Image (cartoon, rainbow, N blue to C red; front, top):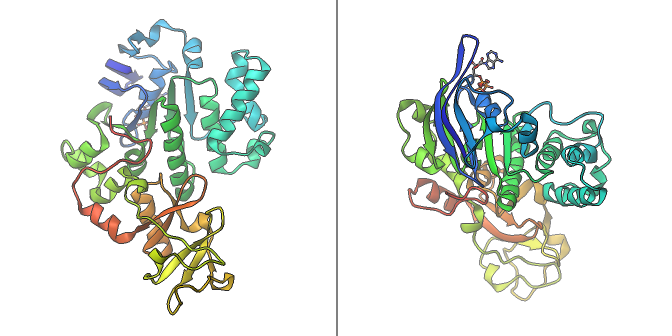
Length: 372
Ligand SMILES: Nc1ncnc2c1ncn2[C@@H]1O[C@H](COP(=O)(O)OP(=O)(O)OP(=O)(O)O)[C@@H](O)[C@H]1O
């Protein structure tokens, strides 16, 4: 656990933190959010001693950070930032292995770790020798996350890590990071000024204003009971929509009975207007209209309207909010849902989402954002 006790910090005349007392739980994502200048980055920089407080102390698992040298401390704390990210003259591999090299790991251990991390962030081995300028913004951020995780630190500090990425890729990166975190379970301190990103990722949400914490707790609690006008205004009027970020498709998706070319349409799908079509291996190929078909008739390849899964589908680990924006973006009411292997595993309908948006009940949460 990371604990702030009576933390004050000023730069010259300007007070950046004005008495912060807070606990950030181990193995969870704490998101620090607030308007520009409220002290978010200062909060983060105090944890790995990029700056030191004027007053108060910070404890990591009961031990004061000031009792350790900044160098020692930082070897155990990963750090991901928006801009400076990667060293331009280092390859992906060299960037990822910076800390293991500093720690003088033997070559075999470094190679093994590199393999694990490339798999974790979903980049093929072909990327190892690439330079940062050859990567897209999203790929560069993935490499930044891998670099921060390289030496398996307990703590990960992330300062607006996806801030420079376009909105679509940003939501993909958020989903991926939630999935990664559900595997690695680091103590993450994540700074953002994007309330949707905060609600999507946070186990523990810390809302700041003028160098103070105004409310902290699970995002659903804060969305349901904002402590006062500032928080209410800050989280915005569309709270029902924001709640959708808390829930994953896996738990509300409907079963799907896809058809295959060369086979009759499964009986469960016959009363519908159309059917999803998959390959032998279960990958989504497209859809076919069902009107006027005889039950035993085999589906012909020419009947299939092909779709690109990446454009249409959502993952079962994605949030309901992602599904809703995908529906609105594509103008369709029913989306295919895929597993991480890109196989069709279910479908989700606009009506189901609308019903949940209006409900106040307890719903299962999206992967990586489990309640404390
Ligand atoms: N090195 C510095 N010297 C002087 N003032 C600073 C310095 N760093 C931050 N400040 C001031 O301290 C206050 C808090 O800054 P901080 O960067 O922690 O806020 P923030 O919430 O991260 O802001 P933003 O969202 O704009 O990045 C701001 O008013 C800022 O101008």
